[in-house]
Amino acid sequence: EVQLVESGGDLVQPGGSLRLSCAASGFTFSIYSMNWVRQAPGKGLEWVSYISGSSNTIHYADSVKGRFIISRDNGENSLDLQMNSLRAEDTAVYYCARDRYGDYVSDYWGQGTLVTVSS
Amino acid sequence: EIVMTQSPATLSVSPGERATLSCRASQSVSSNLAWYQQKPGQAPRLLIYGASTRATGIPARFSGSGSGTEFTLTISSLQSEDFAVYYCQQYNNWPPATFGGGTKVEIK
Image 1 (tube, each protein chain N blue to C red):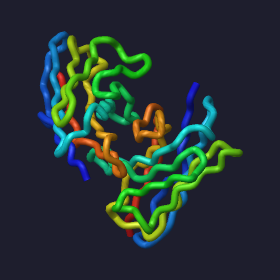
Image 2 (image 1 turned 90 degrees about the vertical axis):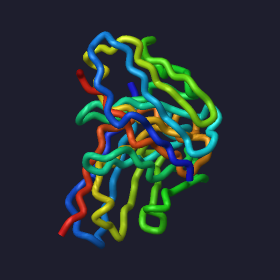
Image 3 (image 1 turned 135 degrees about the vertical axis):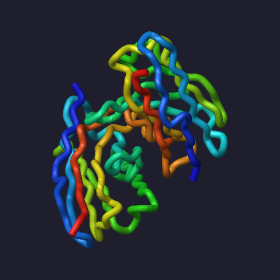
């Protein structure tokens, strides 16, 4: 059974940093691309970042480019999102999601972790 | 960036009735269109990809159609568990792979 479990969400002050993690199990992690998708309270879905299985291809949404860094450890079956220079508008539930075929379609999602940016 | 527009924002439907949800792209996305379902407090679930192919385990009452810029998700006979928010997502031109704003299907 595919499982994705996010952790690391917290309350952080504007300008601060936070590192999210996603533990994957139930599939061969190294061959799948992964996405981070976020959802602000009461709002819709926003794709944040993408990383290929080998980490050779990485993409970011313009809204987080230069502030967030996606990475993965295939030996540990884990996906990370380092979030720097956080802003109030980064407040959201952050989901990690398995990418179906490297085409940005997410076929399995974690339950999400809440990041709140507030003073 | 391709903008995805969903309509209506809210759809009130009685159990057993048919629901038709629309999604429009600001430019052609071919058939590279996915639909997701999200229930309150839960993560999204993939329903449809390739505009019309049901994902694993999705009931046949869910069907997708369209290509280019106009797409439709139809739920043929609404069950109680189908009341949720539905999002479309284009994955033809990325990054970013953009989502629509969602349609909430509520009980009439």
